[in-house]
Image (tube, rainbow, N blue to C red):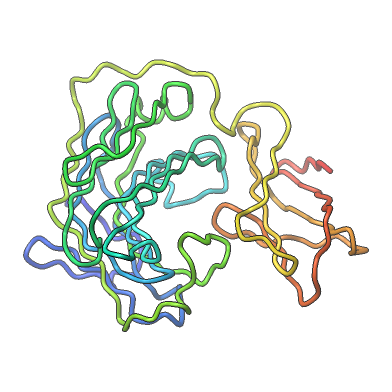
Length: 299
């Protein structure tokens, strides 16, 4: 089979060429949705899925490529190319689709693109195409975005080594950090919720010339760590992303101290960022103490 279950096989059925994924309730993200991983190793090629997305805030219907065999592990550098239909971004008869590329250790190159249809009302065709220098996002036959990847050595290597894996997923979140996706608690639609996938094609190019290029790994190179405030921070909830992590290193802990606090607070890890929150407000500026996977500490 082309696809294998990553988790929650009970949340997926297959009938008539359609994968139907289920989110039973908005109460628990841990039981919402599932993921299918492709068996073939992928590089340059054209990868297609017709999808009908789950609507409403906190829901994510996704077709994407991820570093092969990593099982979405982000503890070390990885590559990823995304099409994510965020239910919160479906409104007014249109949909803003989250397109993204990940390079290095957690560096994003995202862009929201608008299509003139409600992605939860019917099937539309979504394509990731990779040639020897560019990535294309094509929806219903039209190119909405291109990204030149030859300046990112890690991504060039992943593509040339056929080190991508196709992914189909439905998931939900209570996380307040990704404002574009939102929180399932605020989803007014009836549950259970479903996402549908069909006409999936993984057409790997077998005669393409290898990609060339190099330079930055987009976050996995040398230089100083880069700390960036996450969208949505406020006096009660503070979050940052940590990028430009040297190759071969991971982040063990991130500690944050606000100007009005006397002690360091160990940040909690969520998705691609670290956050702190208490029942008392935080005041800027903030100090940071980061410990790497090899025990090195940077303050």
